[in-house]
Picture 1 (cartoon, rainbow, N blue to C red):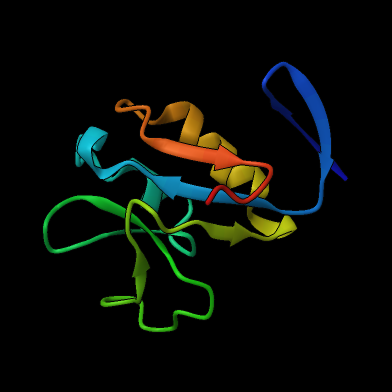
Picture 2: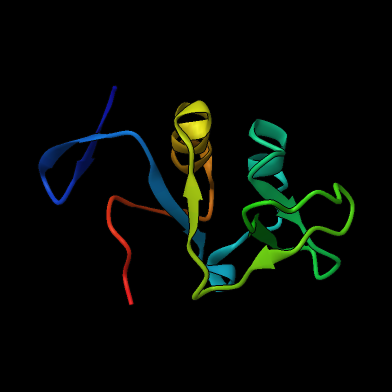
Amino acid sequence: MHTFVSNKRSVPVSELLVSIVQEDCTSCGLCPTIDPDIFFMHDDSLAYVKTEGSTDPTHPEFATLAGQVVVSLAHIDLVIEAAEECPGECIMILDERVE
């Protein structure tokens, strides 16, 4: 079990939600390099998170700004690493769904 720190509290998690604020994306391509199963650089040169079950590696379905994708336990460490390394600080990791 992993622990995610959110709003200065520790939360044991088996999954997290991730989204990207495209307006802050620097188009560096780091996030899909770290975890290509979750992140994707679209034709507009911005990073997006892939929707669950997306199978086409070159043109996957993707979530926009409002989209939040569930990250399974297998990808949590990589998603957190991508968020920490992101120069635009645009990767948002949530421990609960935001409407």
